[in-house]
Amino acid sequence: MSGNQSRVFVARLVDTTVFDPNGDPVGRVRDILVILRGPTRPPRVIGLVVELLRHRRVFLPITRVLSIDPGRVVSTGQLNLARFERRTGEVLVIAELLDRGVSIRSSGEPVVVYDVGIEPTRARDWVVVKVAVRGARTGLRRRAQAQVLDWDLVTGLMIDPAGQGTEALLGTFDGLKAADLARALNELPPKRRAEVAGALADDRLADALEELPEADQVEILGELGTSRAADVLGAMDPDDAADLIAELHPDVAEHLLTLMEPDDADDVRRLLTYPDGTAGALMTTEPIVLTPDATVADALARVRQAEVSPALAATAYVCRPPADTPTGRFLGYAHLQRLLREPPSTLVSAVLDPELETLRPDAPLDEVTRLLATYNLVAAAVVDRDGRLLGAVTVDDVLDAMLPEDWRSADPAGTPITTAAPLPPAVSGGDATVGRLARAVAGRASSGAGGSGGG
Image (cartoon, rainbow, N blue to C red; front, side):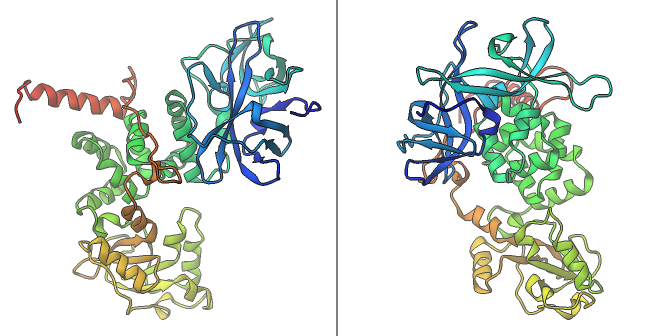
């Protein structure tokens, strides 16, 4: 490692590109791994957690790092491609030290860690030398005073706290796409994952849950209070919420549905009535629906909404009132490409594609895929026997159904990755968690069985 390197603050390393000696990108830094060595010796950096270009996280020993500079890390190019697994005694700086509550040794003042500085020693090791801390917000100050202290001037750094903040850690997740946030959540230790899930906004957590395997969805939902879980389910796409609720015990599922907003719950209940693998089970109940008197300008305004996925934005569905599913009679498709070619004042009823086929809710998956492939569609309407629009099936829903169940938890080579652990222990007091409710239901069912055996 070059000898002219100086201090680096870890939070600024997140997302830094790692290169091999030839200048080819290898991956991106996701965390720093350290060992805490007691009160008199600074924590020693043992390596970096690097996410390869194909989303597998691996361990890069610090001995294979040639240089760490702003905006780039250069490695020897030698990588063990085994998936990263943390060992006992190792601590992830970003995931576990940021937001940790500590005290200033001289005054006892409580502060919170928001960054950690590392630098190389003469022995070519990297060690923690500085801790950036911020005091509690007081008075009218919008932001608490920040200090950068020597690592040994704070106490509590090596104590795993019962509860820990999330502000600095969430800052490292800013700008991540939902799938990347889901991956980051899955990489956190269970305790930190529960804390971060609790701190994320409902819609942000909902987006991330939609990108996780169902077993991991159930685990994270189990760590939330029932009221919060219902709010998050309401923020999910109805088809994803229905898939998740279907994984829960029926009593737990019904309790959550009663806590959801009635309109959201009605959509989910309707989706749960359709058999798996059918258009009805795959569809979303919230496509872009317009009445015949809407204009092209109205359609484009709906398409531009940030919460509309690209697949849903490709098509508007023109129907007689009401415009909420199930709608009045479905009249036809208004494709985005055609809408872009028309004057804004044109009525959508003038640009319809009324001849394009639709799907019945009981249509099997192979019929859905044939329709999409035949007409080069990314979405198709699902209508009932009376011609009312029930929803739309998008190509991403079809792909999700066609891929193996464990595809979200498989590495790029197709090898499954270990997924969810059992639900966490129940917490006492306050709003019961979904996990606690599920265990109570299971216990009640077990008691009702009377302990009888047999098959």
